[in-house]
Each structure stands twice: as structure tokens, then as C-alpha cells.
Length: 271
Ligand code: KIV
Image (cartoon, rainbow, N blue to C red; front, top):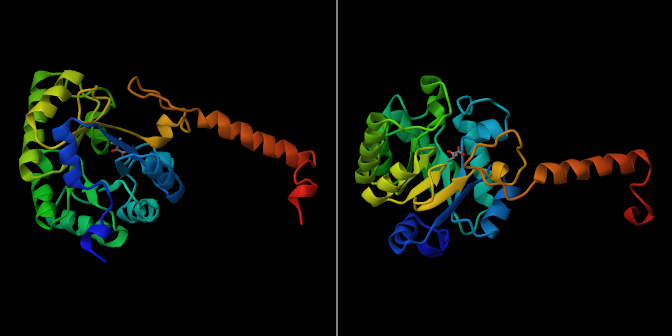
């Protein structure tokens, strides 16, 4: 088997080419095999095994409680489903911030145990040493700036970030640092569109926006939000492409009714 045949069709190199060509990058989350199969077959370029799994799959209020073992469990199921998309896995809270050696160990565990393609982590200058050491091991790193949910207790709110000049300038500096360090892409979450446009212009890595306007090199959404499975979250940036909450609720109610009324199973549905 050649090295090429073990790689998925979308590589970090291909994402750089897409930015250079002005071709937009479509990224979505997945946390399990069945969803990842659908998302990959529908043509998404990058699948993120996000730590939003803490909220969506486990019902936690923040992303902080999810562990490295839990992320590896989700990522393994996703990787088994994917043929084409690049698979990126979030390093969860507490596995990279304090100590760059711990960061390297966490990233290596993800790459070894899940066979994913890359890791993502939140922050700029504060985590630069971790980013550099992970990259030095040959592991591609995606950055994440703007609203960084792992720091929710520092900010106290999920509101739009970097509206003030000082915070905006720090974000631009952080993006440049990550770019120079060699990150292959960077998520920009919930920041003003003009700022996202400036960052996108000033860095060579592709930027992937969520609530950051249309000028970024790509877009990312949480699949459960855009499919309308999770109805309790409706920020302005979210476009809902389906109402699966209603579709699934109706289907389950119909099933319950059919069982109670002895309509299911019928004669054709038995042996
Ligand atoms: O965890 C996640 O789903 C994310 C996206 C919102 C970018 O980080």
C-alpha cells in the first residue's frame, strides 16, 4: 500500500491550495460513526470531532468536563466512518494549557489511538509553546481564536469577542503567531466580520469562521445545531437547514402510538 493511499482525499496541503484558489472550505462537527458517514458522503471537507461533544452528546453546560479518553472514544468512531474529509480532533480543556510536554503527550495519544489527521486547540500566545512542540512532532495543528469556550469562566459570557480595539489587535497578533508557527488553519469564533476579514487577509493559513461573517476561507457549524436536532441554541449566526427535532419527535410519537394500539408489528413485519 502506498503512503498516498492511506491518506484521506482532503489533506492540510489541499486546504492551503483551496485558500489560494479562493475555494471555500466546508467544515462540520461529528461525534459518532453514523453522523460522520452522512457528513463525509455529503462532501464536507473537514470533520471536527469538537469538544462541543460535551454539550451535544453528554449534556454538560460547558465544554470543560470532557476528558481526553472521551474525545478519543468519539474520534475513533468518526475516523472509522470517513473516507474523504480531513478529521480534526479537539484537545480538551486541561490537556495542553499548563505544560507543553503534557500537550505533546495528549496530541500523540489522539493521533496514535484514533488515526485522525490533526488536532485543534484554543488560544494564541498563551499556548504557543504547546503549538510549536506539537508541530515539531509532525502533528498538524488547527488554532481557535475569538470566542474560546474552554475559557468561559474567565470571560463569563458567550457574547461576541474582540469588539474593542485592544482585544482585536491581540487577536490579529495571535493569528499571526499561529500562522508563523505553522498551524494549517484557524477557527475564528464569534468576532466582528470586518476583523475576520482582516485576519483572513493577513495570514497565509486558511481561516474557518463560525459567527465571523462571510469573508473567512471556510465555515464551520455544529451539525446538531444546523440540522435542528438541538433546538435550544439559536444564535444569530446559525442557519438551520432542517428541523430534525420535529421529524424525530413525530416519528417516535407515531411508533409509541402504533405499539400501544397493537398496530406495530403487522403481519408483514413478523416471521
Ligand atoms: O467544539 C466545537 O464544536 C468547536 C466548533 C464550534 C468550532 O470548536
